[in-house]
Length: 195
Image (tube, rainbow, N blue to C red; front, top):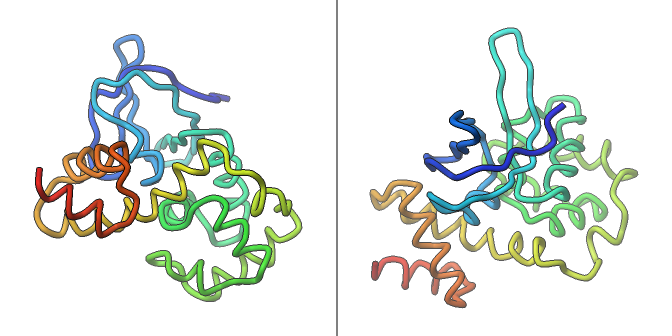
């Protein structure tokens, strides 16, 4: 199977990234966490999961192996498909998700758009034994720090897109604000609106 694809980011559109590799543009669905870290023209490696269905193939991409590992756990839960799993990863940081599962915290999971209480309870029930406490309370790595900021960034992107900006433009502005040190949704939004 395909573990990752390396190439240049050719396009960003909503939750889809087009990654060019040897003259082929791979359309990859990604979480907002991954999307915030990408810019058009950047050369990156994206870890991928290939979904094969009778009506076609779909690629799902991740910024790091931890995010991919959690995605694979989520889709192992009955009733959770790849798109729902991406929504969960977009709405909840990896450490926060691990903590919610370990603490039977359905409220955190149901904050994710489109995720009901029964599905949240099923995720907790089926994944509780598969999550180690170190995933929830371990020392933050660079990737988990990025994930923690992304929920604030996600909120800012949602507001910017509701004001008429494209997802790509909103994402670029938010990424720039995060790089400049703004971490709360309010400060990111305030500076992103300035241009």
